[in-house]
Length: 344
Image (cartoon, rainbow, N blue to C red; front, top):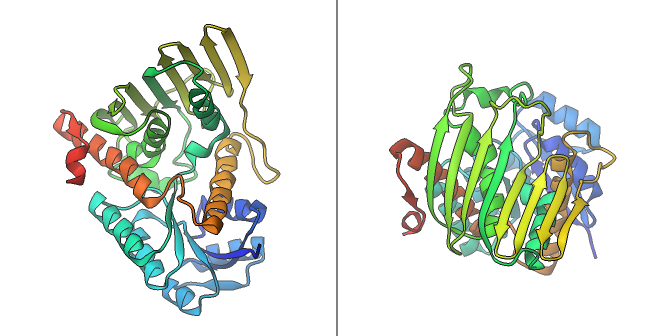
C-alpha cells in the first residue's frame, strides 16, 4: 500500500522521539515540520532530513501534501490546531493533555466527528510492553474477575531538568503524569463512575502539586487506587516504570520494578520478564516510553489505513481527560466527583 504522508507540528523536547518512531513505522513518512522557534526547526529538520519547514501552521496546511498531522505542541494550541486540521480535512494526532478544559476537548471531538476527520490522542503509556502484558493476562482470565487494583508511579526523578516549564505550571503531576496512569487504570479495569482525590506539593520550588492519591470506583464494581509522586526518594529509582497490583477472584497479578510480571493462581505462581525492547535510537531508562511511542504511531497508521477506530481516539480519551478534571475538582472540594455528571 502507498505510504501515508504526515506533518509534525512542534519540534520540542518529546517530538524528537516521535520523529525517530516515524522513521521506524511501516507505511508512514513525515514530509514537513512546523515550529515557531527557528532553532528547533533547524535542529529537527537537519537531524531527520526534512526539507519542508514552516514557522506558521496555517501556511503548512495551505501548502498541504500530507494525509495526517502529528500535533506535538503545548496544550494551549491544541484546540486551534485540531480545528485547523478539521478545516483542511486532515486526520490528526494530538499530544496529551487533550485540551485546557473538558469543554474544549468535547468541542474538538465534536468538530472532528461532524467533519468526518479522524482524531487520536497520543496517549502512549497504555502501549508499553509491560502494560500490554498485564492486559493480556486479564483477557486470558488468569485471575478470574478483578475486584481491586493499584497503579503506581512514585519517583524522585528530576523531570524539571529536561522540561523546566513543568515547574511553572499551576497544575503539575495529575495533568502531566497522572493522566497516563489514570488512562492505564481505565484501559485495564474499565470506565469509572466516581473519583476521590488528594494532592500535595512537597517540592517548594514548583508551583503545582507533585503528589496525588486518587481513588476510582469503576463501573464494573472494581475499586482501584492511582498514586503518583515526583517527591519520593527510593533506594532504587524506578523511573519511568508504572507498577501494577491486581487482585482477582482466582488469583493476583503483580507488575514489579524491573519489568517483572508475576501471576499467582490455582496453577501456582509464574514469573515473566516483560521488559520493553531497546530500540536502536532509544536510551535507558526512557526506552520503555520510547518503544510505546513507536507502538502507538504504528497503531495510528494501521487503523487509519483500514478505517478502524483507534484505541485512544478522541472520544475514548475524553473519558480519561474527565478523570483528570474530576481529580482536581475532588482535591479542591475534598469530596467525591461523579463522572457521569461531567457529560450531561
